[in-house]
Amino acid sequence: MIDIAATAKPLDQAVRTSPATASRSSAPRVRIGLARDKAFGFYYPDDLAALEAAGAELVPFDTLNDPALPEVDGLFIGGGFPEMFMAELQANAALREHIASAIEAGLPVYAECGGLMYLAALDHLAGPDLPHGRCDSR
Figure 1 (cartoon, rainbow, N blue to C red):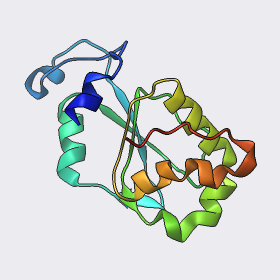
Figure 2: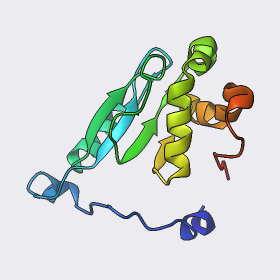
Figure 3: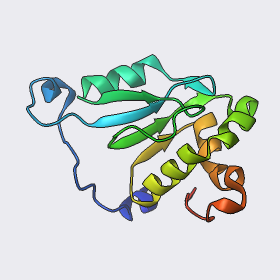
């Protein structure tokens, strides 16, 4: 993990504040897109509270119905049951393409459990219309 982290490009618009000073900071809040729908809904409340305490604004989006991501600085796709909603996820090609393009352009992403399965399956879900190799799962 450390070797991989060492190769990461610096974030252009990183906001560095501690949880204690985040609410007093005049810096713009980091907006984190949060997949929140029937397919993805498992999040540890303490994780979400910690992000908000650090000054992040959590911006929910619906992977089944939204055609694009909201304007965000990062993406968090938590656990859930994407395999139970595969047809709906596959039908939302516009959002899949937007997520893949955003990741390719450098959008920071954190995914766990079902969210990681979804990201790993972006190429598979896309079929022949989306170029492969956009998600690096090292």
